Length: 159
Image (cartoon, rainbow, N blue to C red; front, top):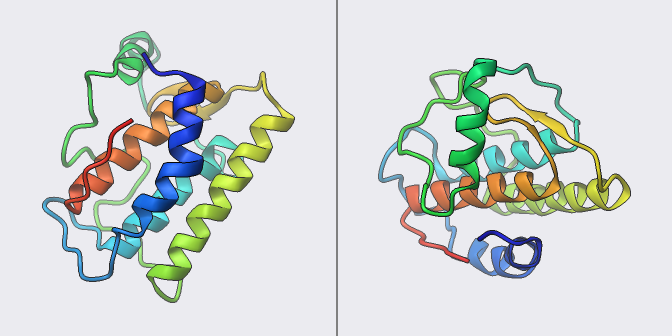
């Protein structure tokens, strides 16, 4: 079962170490993003959680309970080649100068995420696919999202 403690430990302590395995030479096993685009993409979901980016729900309301059960199920990973309806078919061009700058941006986005939920522990914010998520649910979503994209580049992680 996902716990606040294990997810916080992963995101705050283990993920920065795993980021060292993400190098410019990595190529995707699936999908269209390059490694720098992937790291920038991960930053976006941490900022979405803080409300920095306002999104609209793209999942039908009646499907949300099923989606939430899938999200919170430790046995279910995100499927390869999932296309988020919010994103264009082609990857968004990079906005940072290099991979190291993208990694710094990810760390800053994560810091904003943790500060936001420390100051607003009961708040729920909208994810366009999964619906309204609280702090624990956002950590699960971000963990699974990171696991999915790191696997895309051959870097396996687990709690």
